Image (tube, rainbow, N blue to C red; front, side, top):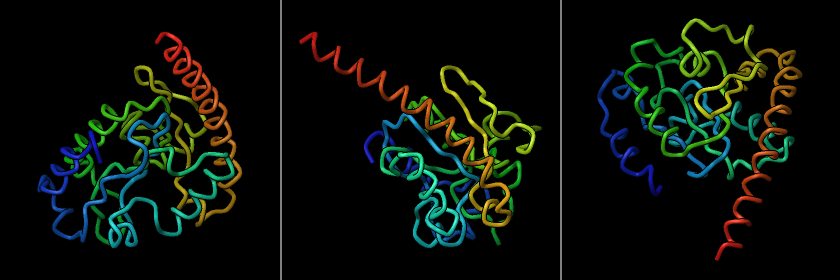
Length: 198
């Protein structure tokens, strides 16, 4: 887990809110620690809590299909959640729970240094863009935080409940895909130029 290991150990020991008492595991996040693209969801569900990995249930399978359709492998991105422990009965985490866990998400972003963050659902969008934002109003619109581009879209679980949301979500991911591959190409050119200096 490299540069995230210390933070992961801190998360394992965290007792800042009551979620840990009810959860089987801390679902810290996984993927490429140098990812250009980071995906942030709300919190672990039952299957995530059981396995200790983010997005491995039905919503995770759908997310994998969306990424695959965009030509992006799950291994090249980093996937995490706003809260690292499962809220009871998959309820939405409270503002206090989000605030208690916020330091871990902020540090993950700081260490990974993604160029793009996709907010999957309202909780992630409110945490990273603003507490009053409505996902239905802002999805598909780019936001900026420093040099990070942030794209809010629907959570894959919402697509399972309402298939009409699949089309707009795919439009959002096409915009993400286009920017991602443009940034990736630029990085490859920069890396190549760096090699030429030696």
